[in-house]
Length: 357
Image 1 (tube, rainbow, N blue to C red):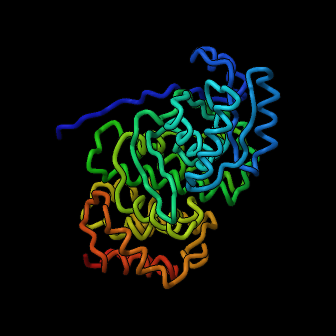
Image 2 (cartoon, rainbow, N blue to C red):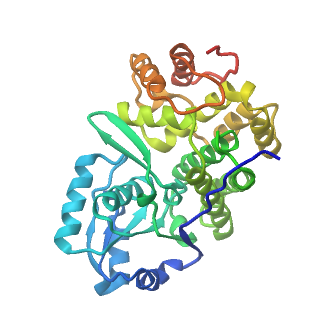
């Protein structure tokens, strides 16, 4: 057996139906009584509903969270939290709001509670990605990991099927990269394969029966496991490219994951045979990259970066950024390999493993 280190999972998790009703007791366990609710502009009604549920425990709502966590937005949220004398924050929504909660926690030391409404998985990680002047910087900081994560399956029933699909593929990417991570361990690999299985089973059913609580619970369960993988082991080429494209071109995060995952898996396949075998075993298909591409197609996910708004002339800039301060990857990546991979993903072509580094 290989030598490994497994760090464990320090966040408290509450999973079920109607679990948002337990927020007051979870706040009390943290010694908190003045919560600032965070959301995106599109989730203002949900933030208001939670504030009503919490009554006097909620001192206000900041509803300006946006993708990629711009530093300027965080600074406004921090000032608002301090003015209200909040002693904790509650992030309600997906990755944009959760990222803002982490950024606020980093600057204030306030404990975080999270009520996820998508499958992003960032609630289970100590990872913070922030954007400033067109560059997204990603760091692992123990102090930004949420203290309590409350999964309420009921809140995912209204997530539109199209968004559910790309959000689920975002979660799937966390599990896939965990299988070939430099610091992978037996526990994380087991979680990753289980996450892929759960998401692979649930996401097509979500498209058919979006208000089926059982199906939604399985999808949320898979997303939770994938988030634990992301929070435990390091990221590789796939996440590096997604962070670059999000910061440089403001591409939508989940959709970018959906487009890129088959291409990166195809590229890494020669150096990650055990990982790709596990993916193929769970999803089926002739190989892992094809299985992922066909699965994304089945969900109606986008195929091409150009369809997400990336300019063709940005490919060279992105390739430069991918190899600058590169993440560890099982297969070496140079600028030309990155450019070729990005070119194929931009055009929506089939993934290929014969791109030479």
